[in-house]
Amino acid sequence: MGWGFGVTPPPPSLSVPPPSAAVLSLVDLAGSERLDKSLSRGERLRETQAINASLSTLGLVIMALSNKEPHVPYRNSKLTYLLQNSLGGSAKMLMFVNISPLEENFAESLNSLRFASKVNECVVGTAQANRK
Image 1 (tube, rainbow, N blue to C red):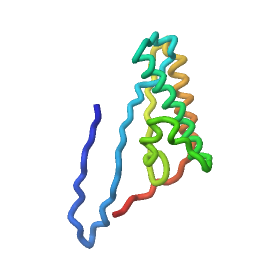
Image 2 (image 1 turned 90 degrees about the vertical axis):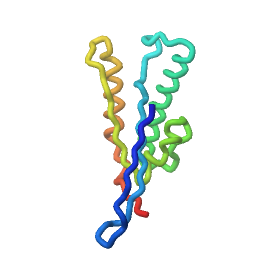
Image 3 (image 1 turned 180 degrees about the vertical axis):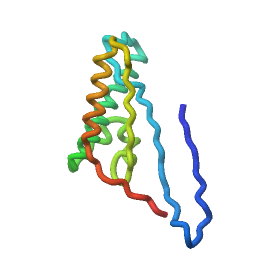
């Protein structure tokens, strides 16, 4: 399910700055899962593998941007390719990581926190306003 909204800028006048253009992307990766624990089969197995691959590529892209590497592997997954304009350049990014309080999910929660910590250490740059 996707969500969207729009904002109508005020009419131009001398006291109002020019309108800005923006894109808001909301992505739910449904969490990475251990294949042996999830007992996934068929389509669900392929979906779980794709989510795990997308998370891995997202981490690589964020690290490449942070290290100012000449090549950023945006094309290594559909997720990073579609979010290319939202990950670099004049973009601002916010990531939420949800973890489970259950002891049986401790290892998975710890992996999620490690991923979040790795991403949090990256400094990509300051976002710039897109003025029309």
